[in-house]
Image (cartoon, rainbow, N blue to C red; front, side, top):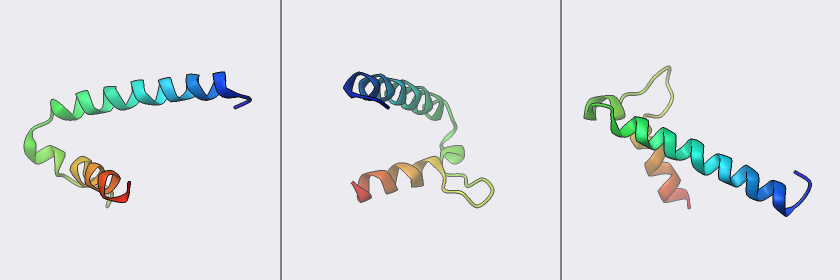
Length: 54
């Protein structure tokens, strides 16, 4: 990124992608949002980690 305008554009992209991710997760069954895949955290665990590490 070369400056503030690039940072704002990148942030807008990140917010859009995150909104899409959350919308998709909300369509999951409750069990699926807690499911781990290939040893990675579940979506719920990821959100919990983001909140507690902030």
